[in-house]
Length: 239
Image (cartoon, rainbow, N blue to C red; front, top):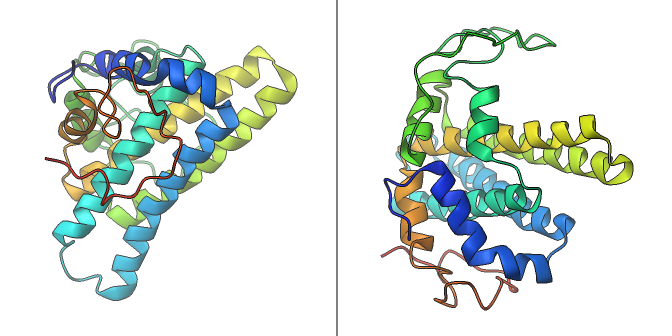
């Protein structure tokens, strides 16, 4: 079982317990990514429609619920892909983002233009590695303050980069291409945190409410449906 105070590793392990078997049987990596990508694009759609409508107003409760649903689903599918490739998210995320931006080595990020290469981060960690999923989200809020629409756009861009990395790795099976898959999946997760931070949403709370007791659709642990049909926010409302 997981709660809003569970560690990032606990959430990743729980995802494997709930969906590991059904994902392995029902989904290729490409189909898993397609599910992930569909939710990142819907995050962007909610943000874009808000900006086109009345950008000066606050997000409505319905919009925030839609954001939370699609962010949680995108995060869940990200964990599923990380499990498929046996990637330890917490370890690789800390290696890439040790409490600071990997380009300017500061928090908050002070990059005016991102350099082509990240600086060496040996000995540059700021503080200790976050313990809980909630702590990871807070860490990224301190590194990358942003606005919702820009974060949603960036999230969609990162999804595209994950897809490119997956295609290259599937064609080459080279170690350096696999490291690129890890980097892009980590970047995608950090942008899920970024959108949640911009909206004041507690991703850990949402994930615990959706998945804490197992699959939110079939209500089994492990899952017995495998999310084999498309789901809408109205189907899976948080308690």
